Each structure stands twice: as C-alpha cells, then as structure tokens.
Length: 428
Image 1 (cartoon, one colour):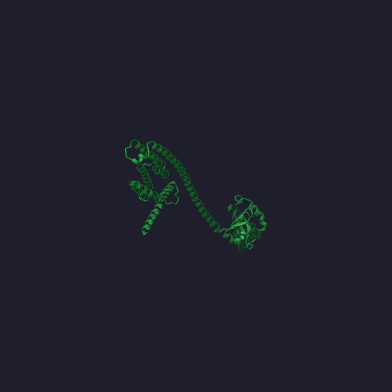
Image 2: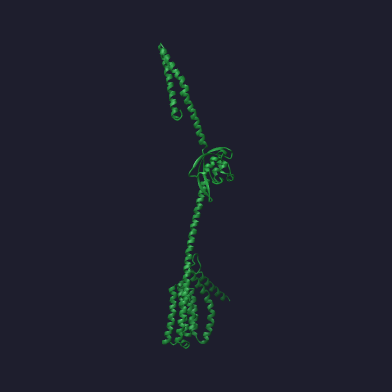
C-alpha cells in the first residue's frame, strides 16, 4: 500500500511539475497562440498517458493470444518512451512534440505492416495530422500530410513489388484496395488539416489584434495614470499657491457672486470664517453705495478691466481700501473669477497725510510770500528813509546794520518761497 501511494505521489509530482513548466504554465501577459498550443499539448499528455492504459491492457492481452509478442513489447516500450520524452525537461517543448509525433508515425507504420490493418494505421496517422496541425506551423502541418502520403505510397510499392515478407498485410489487403483507402484517407486528411490551419490562423490574428489592443489599453491607462498624477501634483501646487499665499485670494461665481473658495489670508484679513465666507456673496463685503460700481466691474471681463481700487468691509465693520486684481477661471467646470486683494489702506492714509502736509506747506509759503513779505517791505522802505536822514556816523552805522539785517531777512523769505514752489510746482 505504501509503495502504491509512493508511486501515486511520484506521478502526481511529475504531472504538477510538467504543467507548471515555463511555456505551459500561464504567466502574466502570455496568452498567445503558442501558449494555447503548449497548454493543449500538456493537457493531451496529461489525459492521454493514463487513459492509454485502458486501450493498452486489452490490446496486450488479445495480441498475446494471437501470438504477436513483438508488437506487445513495442507497444509497452513506445508508451514508456512517450512518457519519458514528455516529462524530460532537458528537451525543449518543440523537440518533445516532434519526437512524440515521429514515434506515433513509427507506431502506425509498424501496426499496419505487422498486423496488416489499414484501419490501425489510420487510427494513429489521422490524429497525428490533427496533432501536427494544432501544434505546429502551416509548413510542418502540411509536411505531415505529405508524410502520410509517402507512407501510403511506400506501402503501395510494397504491395506491388513485395520486397518484404509481410504475410498479415498481404493476406488482408490488396493493392487496389490499398490505393482506394489511401486516396480517400489522404483527401480527408488534407481537408481536415486545411480547415484546422485556417481556424488557427484566424484565431492567431485575432489573438495578436487582441494583444495589440491590450497593450494599447495598458499604455493608455499608464498615460492616464501619469496625467492623473500630474493633475494631482498640479492641484497640490495650486492649493499651496492659493491657500498659502500671503495675499487674500477669493473665488466667486460670476453669475451669483457667491464665494466658492477663499484662502487663509482672506480669512485673516476680513475676520470671517471659511464657512461664513462660503455663505456670503461678493456684494456682502462692499458698502451699499458701491454695489452699482461693483456690478459694472463684474460685467467687464478680466482682460478688459484687470485691476481696480475700491473699498471692502471687514467683519468688524471697518472699511479698508483695497486694490483688486482678477482673472477669469474654471472652477469645477463652471465659469468663475479669481480676485487677488491687496490692502492699500496704509498707503492711502500715508498719501493723505502727505497731502495734508503739502497743504500746510502751501499755506506757509502763502504766508511767507504775502503776509510776512508786506510788512517786511514796509520795514525795508522805512529803513531806507531813516538811513538817508541820519546825520551822525554812529546813527548811520546803526541803521546800516539794521538795513543789512532786514535785507538778509528778505533774502531768507525769498529762498523759502522758492523752495516751496519747487516742492509744490503745481500749487501757486
């Protein structure tokens, strides 16, 4: 019992090893005609060897009763050789197929020669042609048809010339009968091989086309995956540029003015939360009196009116001066607009402070040139008059000094007026 189990395990391992052999075992992407031919060969060997015992055992018993001992020995040896060739991994699959086909042809020739039965030969030669048509190329398949023709022709010559002593063959068949059987056999053999090769060639073209389409599909999927990855990177890059930007950025629907997305800088600058922003409209951060100007600005395209200055309202009610730059975009497939807001409140306040200082400076210049200069001119005139009427030297020296001081003061006033006019050239 143990020996029987060991033999079973041995044959089971041999079969598994044979079916998992490269070229037979299915691998990724290998589903061409050659793969299926190898798979068919493995399946045929897998079932043919054990099933052949059901035909071999009765044949051996009957042939021994008829005294065909040599044929019995040949049958056993042939089956053993087929098994050894099929499971010999040192030989390529193609060579194993060729050797097994040659062995089948030899077996058919011996059966016809020594048993004198054309039927026995056809039993093996006809499946041999089918095997060749299924396993090999067109050239090899038709070669086996030609081989069958040569075998039939050779036996016809043997019938005619009788160079060998084959009593069973000569007793059961005549030359005329042999030729009739052979012609019909070769005809059917050729037709079947042609049909099989036409079917396999069409199947091969279909598989090649399918494989090509499969590769193209894989290539397209890879390209799609690459595009998706690039899209994800682009989206991540956009989100980084959008959300991490130090300037407030807001996206709104052009039709409804409803905010679609805002960045962290906008939340910080305006004081609203993201949820509050997404429930608001662009008009909600504008003063009521600015709505008409806002609608006119929205109606204009971004290229026509790329930037403008306006005022926005913060959550705490404070109005801030802003410069708005915008561009039209697609957001989730819908037309939208991106606005980038720059708070210019400090700049506006600084400009206003400078304008106030300029106004004061202009007022000072006016006072210097009009208010101060009139009494100074009067002093200069009085000083000249007093100097002309002075008689003593000490008085003249004193009034000369006063005259110089007044003229120096007049010179300083004139310089102040000129400097103011240079600073404020447009304001007289």
